[in-house]
Length: 571
Image (cartoon, rainbow, N blue to C red; front, side, top):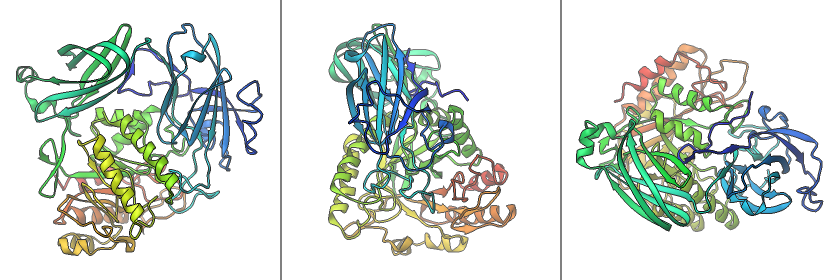
């Protein structure tokens, strides 16, 4: 298999880049001697690895699942032109130190989000790039998601990921260049606000088009930061036939192209007219009631672990979900690759973006998590597919939130901090239970009986007294205020279809039994009075969990149209 070579950031795509995926030299540093011995200089590395796959994965070429907390990478690259050069990393778990030609150029902490560094002052025609990755497998206050701190996977925890696990690439830009944009659509006023961030004074050419026809062309003068609102006039909307054709939905995912150019630097992007809101206990998409039918998606693959083997694997997962009648996913304990979000944008697929949590709370861990969470929002702000931000799940990382005021304050502060950066999406402080303040009232319930499920959500007083996993739905001093109710985890029906042994919350014995059980839990929620959407656990089996609708290698356990017929009962 050839290493992944597609453009890693398709919503901010420059007209040229250099992919650094592929074969790198590699070395374990179990005694943590690399810094003392200056391995970033002329040191022999004793292994090879295929980037961007972590050493624990089969696709890395190493496939060693034992604990190695410190690892080193090295490769060479050549440059014909020594103009301003930016080095990008999609994600390195957890701490990365980077050297160019023996000189330290940056350090980054946060294993689930990317970073970049200007290496112009360090490059020459032939260059050596070295990365040291440190990832403490036992540190429970570091964000880890489903990566297990013990040697072998068990229960709901899986194989760890250490080091580089998303693409690495170079971009060369003018001395003054566009660093990033924030694009905020206003569906009601048919406009888009663009915030520009540059490293100096620039006159940026902006062009907006739809289906190949240019409708807006403008020039914006920027000094480091600037905002401009581009209005799409009624006349131009009429040329696009009807406004509704411009609105993004999973059923009709219209994307509007936008480009930014300065000198020979040309950037392609897109946005969508999409609005998320709530009214009278209902979720609205573009001001209309919209019922969410989601799948829990861990984002793991047998051979790549957290890294998709190919770009086509992202597309395959989305299309399989849609073929089963689901309109989105809750990405669970993982911040997904921007390529997945790009395909969700263009194919029409809702995403709840959830952080990878720590297991325990410390002040140091809270500081690290907050920084990483802000970087996540910054990177993914422009994707129309994302409709919810979920900093915490089931009190992970705030494990004593019910009684600990520090942890209550932390969850609440992240809600408001997220709202400071983004007023256009839902924010859920702590998905499943122990909510402080949240825009959606989300509950996890693995009851397998249809009648019990339906009855549980017919009366709001009964709901508020419900204690899933013996946890209260709200932390003390917080209460329900009419938010839309989403059952954001349910199902979890185990069905073994291959030689993988494992577990689920209930168990099916054959195809007929499995589809009957799936039908029971889905229709039980569809028929409940107060349920405004659901998220079934889960899309695929993962390692020892066999409660997916698909096997771990994405084979359907039953005909997909049978599941679609169940989902389609609720419009």
